Amino acid sequence: MERKTPNPNRQRDHQANERTFLAWLRTAIALIGFGFAIARFGLFTRQLQATLTTQPIPEHPGLNSENLGIGLVVLGVLSIAIAAWRHNQIFRQIERQAYQPNQALVWLMTAAVMTLGILSLPLLTWRGENPTPSSPTQLKRRS
Image (cartoon, rainbow, N blue to C red; front, side):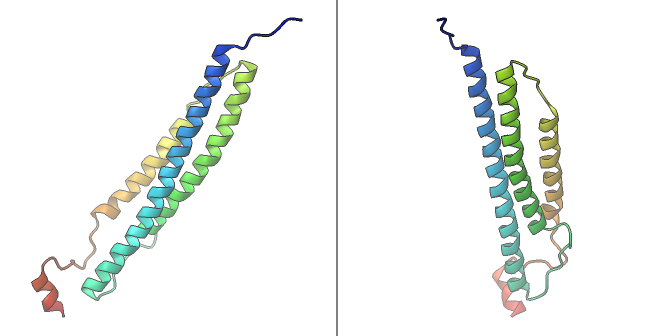
């Protein structure tokens, strides 16, 4: 009876596939964490500004920190699903010895993260029409 020797390249390929999957998971967790932080920090800064100025704070209905945060969380969850799908696809290709690299997912993820990053720029630079008091004397004058 002939004993089959394990192919060390196949084992390395599967380990590399698993490392790539774990990298996707780390990226997804980071996206979810950033999304949560951005959404909550936006709420905090709005409440702080409303308390300091005692005036309603104008907010863009579509481009705000909550929507950006939700978008990042959704992208993170989708990344997990894509990672699992891609891991299984590559696993089958390694077993068949028919690996086909696919750059489409890399470009898709790049475009999604860049889009959300670009959408965050106005949130970082927009100050609104109501200036926040910067000194204790300005705070006393408003009281």
